[in-house]
Amino acid sequence: MPALFFPRRYPPLLRVAAFVLLSIVIAGLSEKHPNMLNWSGNLTYPIHWLDLQATENWRTVSQYLQDRRSLLAENAQMREKLKTLEPKLLENEILHNENRQLLALLDSFPQPPGKMAVAQVIAENFSPGSQLITVNLGSRNGVQVGQPVLAAGGVAGQVIHVADLSAQIALISDLDSSIPAQLAGTNLPLLVNGKGNIHWLSVPFQPRNTTLKAGDQLVTSGLGGRFPSGLHIGIISRVIHNGDEPFAQISVRPAVPLGQLTTVLILLKNKPASRSDKA
Image (cartoon, rainbow, N blue to C red; front, side):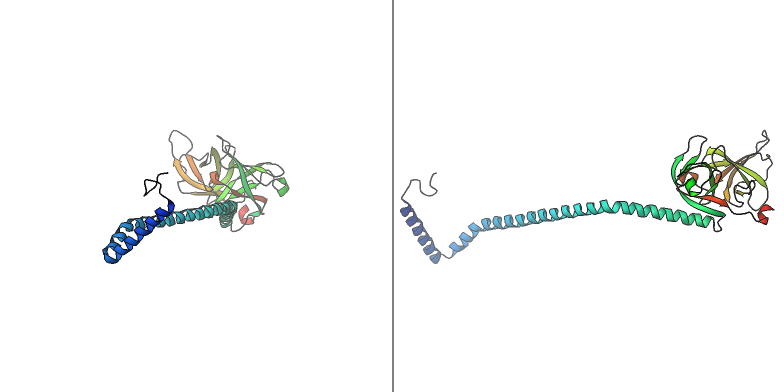
């Protein structure tokens, strides 16, 4: 490797002596010329500045890497906690919704019409004409074919098939559904039939000059003994008087949101009808 200050290879002792002599000369000049210190300071300032900047940059990068590692570790811990909390949060949300629905059911029936059981909807079948739901209670829970089913707001349907641990319910919107009804506050006998659509029911066999009108409330009449009297069925939304037809076309909006049922009440045993109900 070529020498830095000496082009030829001189003896080491001679080179040391030369550096010592150079140092003595610079020291002497520094004594006689004070400005030389300033010159040397000016010459070395860029080196010191670069060294300081490199140190600061290294500290910044090191702190960034350390903070990033801490954030990644904290993020991993939070993800693990979230994995354990998600089922609990979901369970709490389900319980909250169930409690809210149960409160709505209790508000709908401040005076229970008989012995009831709370059931959860586990399946739906809304094919054209067929409006069915399946619940998680069956014959082991006292459920029987023909029992009325209620939901928040009023009547939802009735049990049509029972297994040991489940039951199938035909909603009042089912094509085969027909409920004895009456105009609220009167004894006018009516029928409310399903149309195969969860949003609409119908009142058949009413003359085209019927006095029924939009906004009238329909309730169960209690005839037949299957549904207790006074339970809400729905509200008349439209009455069409057609001069060419012998009967009016009457559409009813169900009191219960039939397409959003998650909790229902099965009336296990009807409450004995009072004399006022029989009158």
